[in-house]
Image (cartoon, rainbow, N blue to C red; front, side, top):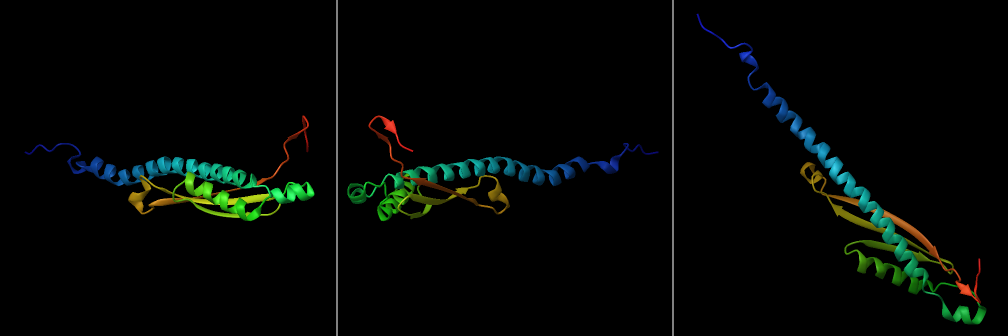
Length: 146
């Protein structure tokens, strides 16, 4: 008579289950880790666009201000300065800007490399941010104008 261990046919079943689930665990960890990085990158792109728009809106058309007393933005210089701010602040970021006499709009596109999602073929995440800023007259004679 031979003694056989109970459930001898189940040997290694846990190993197979763990091997199958390890891919799911890795994908989940990638979503959590790289998802957090994506949220941070999106906020960074939005912040970058806001600051670039403000940098562009600082370029007032001095001649128009002296001639007509209006706060007009020097549109070509505003576009140049806004995109220069993006290039200097975030290497590799792309910038498109438009400007009118009253506002500067900046759109920023950044690419963030992934850490764990690269294992499943997603090597980078593209994020975008946009913002608009306008010229506002500051303090004159001790009062703030609207």
